Amino acid sequence: MKWILALLALVSADVCLGQVQAVSFEVSKIYNKRDPYIPEYSLLQDRPVIFEEEGINSEEEHWTHRINLGVDYNIYRSGPLRLYWDQDIAGYSTRKQYRKMYWDWELGASFHKRLDIFWHHRSEHGLETADDKRYPLEDIMGIRVYLYRR
Image (cartoon, rainbow, N blue to C red; front, top):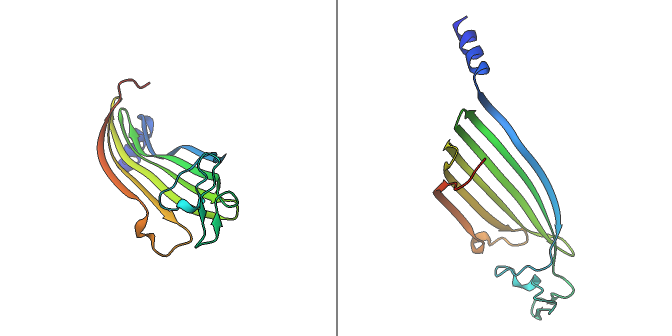
């Protein structure tokens, strides 16, 4: 009986456990993308890049579209305390196929309306190569101070 009363006290307070804040899906057209890791598909200011060894002409085969799925998730929220996990998964395509993906996520805690402590991860992955070591990976731990926040 005591655990039921404790659960009711949590529910009646301003407490949230596991709540999706936002889900988004976007599709976009790429007008200019310069990629140092896959340069053969970069169309630089309407000037083709030609890689004769691979038989690739960027005028014919270049970056065209990007899709993105975003999910913002509250793990726990009570008053000014908020634990969250926000993430984006995106894919980039050329005219023929999807060639590159990235996963971008942030795990963090808001202790006050104007202060976050976070761990941010971003990794990029080529879909047509077994050597994934050349693609960027970034892990960051930081503090964010909001100058203005509603």
